[in-house]
Amino acid sequence: MIINNIDRVDDITPEEFRKNYYLPRKPVVISAAGLSKQWPAFTEWTWDYFKSIVGDKRVGVYNNERANANTLVNGADDYITFGEYIDMVRKGPVQLRIFLFNIFQHAPQLAQDIVWPDQLAKGFLKKYPMLFVGGAGSVAHMHYDIDMSHIFHTQFLGRKRVLLLENKQSPFIYRMPFTVESAASFVNWHEKLDEEHFPALRKAKGLTTVLNHGDTLFMPAGYWHHMEYMDSGFAMSLRALDASLAGKLNGLYHIVGLRGMNNILIKLAPQWWYHKKRELAKERADKALANLAI
Image 1 (spheres, one colour):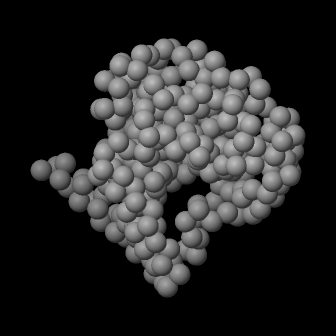
Image 2 (image 1 turned 135 degrees about the vertical axis):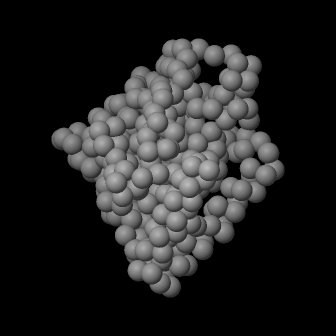
């Protein structure tokens, strides 16, 4: 792959953010000093604090295994209480993670601990801030968010290695039809990728960084992302709808049409569809490579 670093800023004005990142749809990391350090959550959100207020809530947990032929979109591998999960994480590395946990539904008072960055973007879905939690070594495999929202992803405890790719890179990373997933594996991508079986990866252009406590990653709508938890930790994603009508309709299509069709095919012909969508991803990647050679 062709890899560059994601831009980083310690502070940025709304005008600079809009001109340099929001309108061009370019990722950027805003350091804690420039945004989250002013939030009560920066210091108050700890494992003990979360366990005390939502430790009894049952949550879906996800392992590092990639989806098999019978796995529906967003299907959890198990359900345990958040407190039990925190205890597991604190004892040592555990390759389990939690995603799309709307903790504010269970503890509305947490809304007072963050400040929505309305100066940077409009259209925030303020009822749906999502918590993402992972043990050291857990992985969020390469995908892009199905609702096609802009994401402001703030890391709290722990470090997380991030790989991003623009959506137009989809053919080169073997996007499977009717999914927001890649057929290729990006686990430990910084050490080695399987470019023998997935040769188009050599032409893919990615961006990377390591998120530390307080870093906020702006991830424009449709960006592919692969995240690996270097330490046990958690992050909060704030989502903002695309300002354009076309962007909103694209998000609706992804949620209703694309996901629905994929799940139907999984139910009707799981083995056939599992192999077919990988076959089609390879055909599209080969075509993209051929077009580069012209």
